[in-house]
Length: 127
Image (cartoon, rainbow, N blue to C red):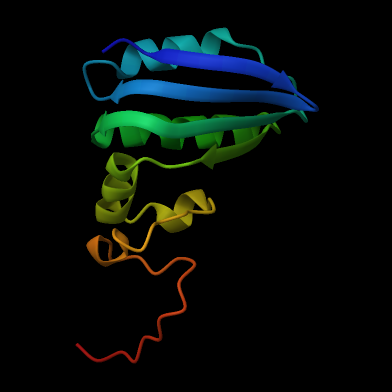
């Protein structure tokens, strides 16, 4: 599935919504589309990930690249509405803390993930 990026201007930057597969077969197309856009220094960029159906480690690497690119170019980046596929890969790879995004997980999915970001569970250290 080719990358689909819906874009709109918002005060101070751009809001985008991504749709498709962030997999090794498609990562170069996603990167090319991302780099064609110009995001001025000091601007804001939000990327809605709710319509990402599949992601693999290559897709995760692309999101890491985008995070670093934005930091180097002083672009305020926010990933929003992470799909379940994204959360599963971030959980397995331990990337939740790296990205530092606010993550919303409905109660039904809470037990599927090991991360405790934003939860009020107490951890007693026992195994």
